Length: 93
Image (tube, rainbow, N blue to C red; front, side, top):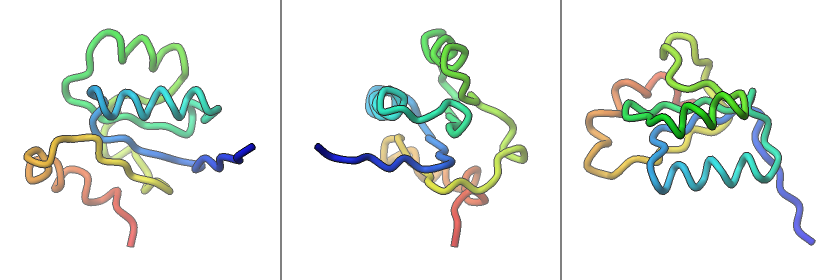
Protein backbone atom coordinates (compact mmCIF):
# COMPACT_ATOMS: atom_id res chain seq x y z
CA UNK A 1 0.00 0.00 0.00
CA UNK A 2 1.33 3.45 -0.90
CA UNK A 3 0.70 6.69 0.91
CA UNK A 4 -0.04 9.88 -0.96
CA UNK A 5 0.80 13.25 0.52
CA UNK A 6 -1.14 16.02 -1.11
CA UNK A 7 -0.05 19.67 -0.95
CA UNK A 8 -1.91 22.21 1.17
CA UNK A 9 -2.26 24.54 -1.81
CA UNK A 10 -1.93 23.89 -5.52
CA UNK A 11 -2.45 26.10 -8.55
CA UNK A 12 -3.01 24.38 -11.89
CA UNK A 13 -2.44 26.49 -14.99
CA UNK A 14 -4.28 24.82 -17.86
CA UNK A 15 -6.98 22.21 -17.40
CA UNK A 16 -7.23 20.72 -20.86
CA UNK A 17 -6.88 16.98 -21.38
CA UNK A 18 -3.62 16.56 -19.45
CA UNK A 19 -4.28 19.18 -16.76
CA UNK A 20 -7.89 18.06 -16.39
CA UNK A 21 -6.81 14.45 -15.90
CA UNK A 22 -4.35 15.50 -13.17
CA UNK A 23 -7.05 17.63 -11.53
CA UNK A 24 -9.51 14.74 -11.44
CA UNK A 25 -6.78 12.48 -10.04
CA UNK A 26 -6.02 14.91 -7.20
CA UNK A 27 -9.71 15.23 -6.37
CA UNK A 28 -10.12 11.44 -6.47
CA UNK A 29 -7.11 11.07 -4.16
CA UNK A 30 -8.87 13.24 -1.59
CA UNK A 31 -7.45 16.69 -2.17
CA UNK A 32 -9.95 19.22 -0.83
CA UNK A 33 -11.31 21.68 -3.36
CA UNK A 34 -10.40 24.56 -1.05
CA UNK A 35 -6.71 23.71 -1.62
CA UNK A 36 -7.02 23.99 -5.41
CA UNK A 37 -7.05 26.92 -7.79
CA UNK A 38 -7.39 26.38 -11.54
CA UNK A 39 -6.42 28.98 -14.12
CA UNK A 40 -7.72 28.22 -17.59
CA UNK A 41 -8.69 30.97 -20.03
CA UNK A 42 -10.61 28.42 -22.09
CA UNK A 43 -12.58 26.88 -19.21
CA UNK A 44 -15.60 25.05 -20.51
CA UNK A 45 -18.95 24.31 -18.88
CA UNK A 46 -17.78 20.90 -17.64
CA UNK A 47 -14.84 22.48 -15.79
CA UNK A 48 -17.16 25.05 -14.27
CA UNK A 49 -19.48 22.28 -13.09
CA UNK A 50 -16.53 20.36 -11.61
CA UNK A 51 -15.44 23.51 -9.75
CA UNK A 52 -18.94 24.01 -8.38
CA UNK A 53 -19.16 20.37 -7.31
CA UNK A 54 -15.75 20.24 -5.59
CA UNK A 55 -15.39 23.83 -4.41
CA UNK A 56 -12.12 24.78 -6.09
CA UNK A 57 -11.50 28.29 -7.37
CA UNK A 58 -11.69 28.70 -11.12
CA UNK A 59 -10.03 31.74 -12.72
CA UNK A 60 -9.95 34.08 -9.74
CA UNK A 61 -8.07 37.36 -10.21
CA UNK A 62 -4.32 36.68 -10.04
CA UNK A 63 -3.96 39.31 -7.31
CA UNK A 64 -6.22 37.16 -5.10
CA UNK A 65 -3.98 34.08 -5.32
CA UNK A 66 -1.28 33.57 -2.71
CA UNK A 67 1.89 31.78 -3.82
CA UNK A 68 0.96 28.09 -3.65
CA UNK A 69 2.91 25.22 -2.22
CA UNK A 70 2.78 23.65 -5.71
CA UNK A 71 2.37 25.31 -9.12
CA UNK A 72 1.63 22.91 -11.97
CA UNK A 73 1.80 23.98 -15.60
CA UNK A 74 -0.62 21.92 -17.65
CA UNK A 75 -0.12 23.98 -20.79
CA UNK A 76 1.50 23.23 -24.11
CA UNK A 77 5.17 24.31 -24.31
CA UNK A 78 4.43 26.86 -27.03
CA UNK A 79 2.02 28.63 -24.63
CA UNK A 80 4.66 29.21 -21.94
CA UNK A 81 5.91 32.56 -23.26
CA UNK A 82 2.37 33.98 -23.09
CA UNK A 83 1.52 32.43 -19.71
CA UNK A 84 4.78 32.99 -17.82
CA UNK A 85 4.44 36.74 -17.14
CA UNK A 86 0.94 36.26 -15.73
CA UNK A 87 1.94 33.51 -13.32
CA UNK A 88 5.48 34.61 -12.45
CA UNK A 89 4.28 36.05 -9.15
CA UNK A 90 2.96 32.62 -8.12
CA UNK A 91 6.33 30.91 -8.41
CA UNK A 92 8.18 30.68 -5.13
CA UNK A 93 11.89 31.15 -4.67
